[in-house]
Image 1 (cartoon, helix red, strand yellow):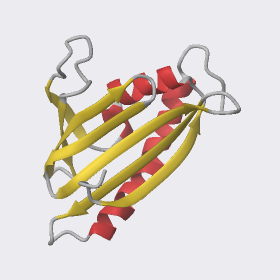
Image 2 (image 1 turned 180 degrees about the vertical axis):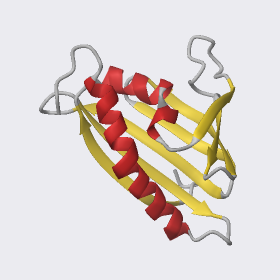
Image 3 (image 1 turned 30 degrees about the horizontal axis):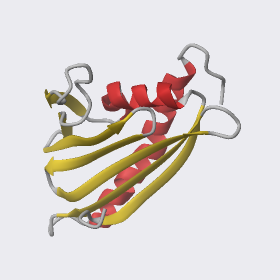
Length: 154
């Protein structure tokens, strides 16, 4: 991780679903967790996992910034890493680690390292991402988990 930007965001959350279920939600429903438009512009290397390693997703944030993220690690059900390859945020690496939670369900550890173009205040981006994750993404992820078969309420 030495070639990525500085750690800006670190979130931990427990979810009421198995690591396999959470991994699949993060893989296939990432766009539902953020207030962006998104489409996959390149399939992953393995046809069985089009959202897996090598896939590229194009996101449009605030209707103006186009960001491309490439999946670099996709190890079911434990780890997803993505890196930006286009956009105003530089050296961005997102790392989502999943482990079984002691009380059942899944513990998600999400870290984001990044730098920005000189004209963009990094702290502003970090605050925006932190607030969006906490107030928008986590509630949606919890709701998706609660609607999975065999999950507990958490």
